[in-house]
Image (cartoon, rainbow, N blue to C red; front, side, top):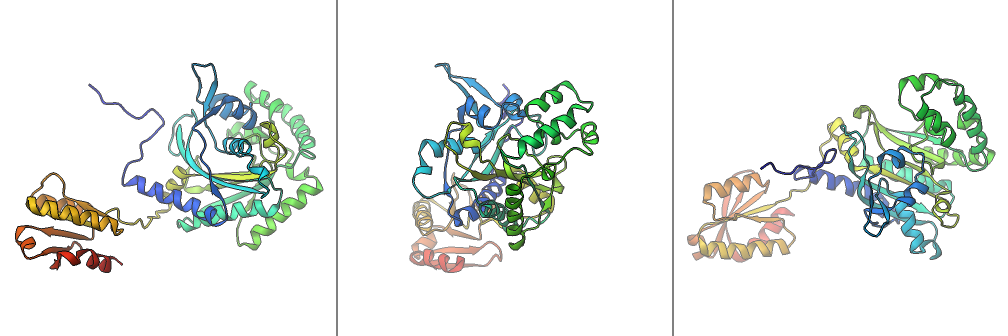
Length: 420
């Protein structure tokens, strides 16, 4: 009988690799926690309508990539393909915007699902850390979020990432640009699917990665030439704040991102060591999303950083994270009395905050010491009946090989001192 395997396009995270993922998740969220963002967790599935309205009916995410299901009661649900729409829905439902302190700052971490052609760095189940600042229109907020992402990447030791920046205008200036772009695109030689996109969301055509399409886009009208004075001033302030904070960026007039809800500031972090799946994170301002999903006008900005892609970027740069040892002390009992006594010591050490493991299964000394070495522990405690009769245990330094007896009553204090 064959064993079950993880579904196509997914993966299991298992030790020791999972430790790196946990460390990356912590590093990406640490700057957010220092900046007043509170943690939010939403269901793994939502109403299909939330994403159709919020992410955009014409996007690949909604048309091709969502996992949808119909419940026994007839409700149409979708596994969440992204985080923003869910977080904004949760904030509106809980009336967080009415508590008086805007913006509402939230961060989240979790799994997201898209039915895509699996390849390295692009999975059907992937992990993100995200942040949303809801209910304020302020260039300083856009700059804050970008700076927090930059600081998170740098704290991991990443160096070779680039920040791409653009403005997509607002409801005043975007319609004029949209019309100019549509007119330009209708004159090109495009396939039926892409032609349909011209009517629904022409900006997405700029994002088309196919060379045959990109070649024809030379000379396409750019949003930056159509920005109204208010959007120009807003974008200039974001750029000035980033520059003052020492954040380098590249202006990318073609950057649109794959979601319909973005307005004004839009940005992407790319890493050139990742091949075609070079985006490691991104986001932007989405001032109209709240109204799209039935809420009041709440200008907001946010981002999502890919945990999987960040791990790949670290590998591409050869960065090895300094992870704390999962086991610091390994205990090896020889005989039944030692087993009972040392199991008590293990519990005491753990309660004292020392990561400790035990030679389970009644292994002999040789096998137990092999397990101790494999565990990565710095110290081993070995005790047999003779040691216990003398009220002592043997403490072995697994790096130097030195071993010395320590009184049983003093072992916890001694290890605390040595590991401090």
